Length: 119
Image 1 (cartoon, rainbow, N blue to C red):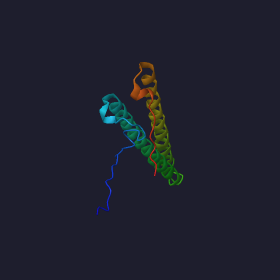
Image 2 (cartoon, rainbow, N blue to C red):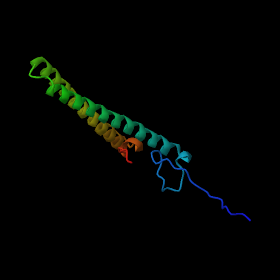
Image 3 (tube, helix red, strand yellow):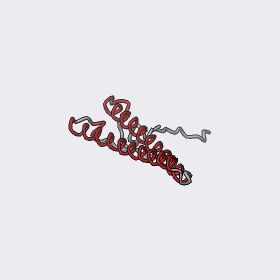
Image 4 (tube, rainbow, N blue to C red):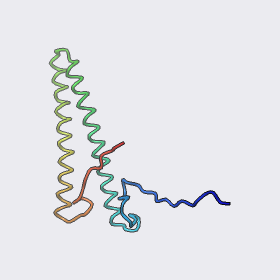
C-alpha cells in the first residue's frame, strides 16, 4: 500500500522571470539578458536610494548638533546639498537609460522598471 503521491513542482525566481508564464526564461537568452540588466540596474538604484537616505539623515543630524557653530552648520548644509544632488543624478541616470532604451529599441532598457523589495 503506497500512501504517498508524487509531487511535481516548478521552482521560480520572481526577480529573473515571470512565474505565470509557461515558457522558461533560461530557454530564451535575450529575455534572460534583459531581465539580468533590469535586475542589476534595480539593485544599484535601490542601493543608491539607501545611500541617499543614510546621508540625508546624517546631514540633518549634523545640522541639528552643530550648536550654532557656523562652520559645522555650513559643512552639514553642503553634505545635505550633495545628498540631494546625488539623488537627482540617480533619477536622471534612470530616466536617461529608459529614454535610450526606448529610442534605440533596446527591450531591456525600454521597459526598465524598478522591482521594489517587498515582504
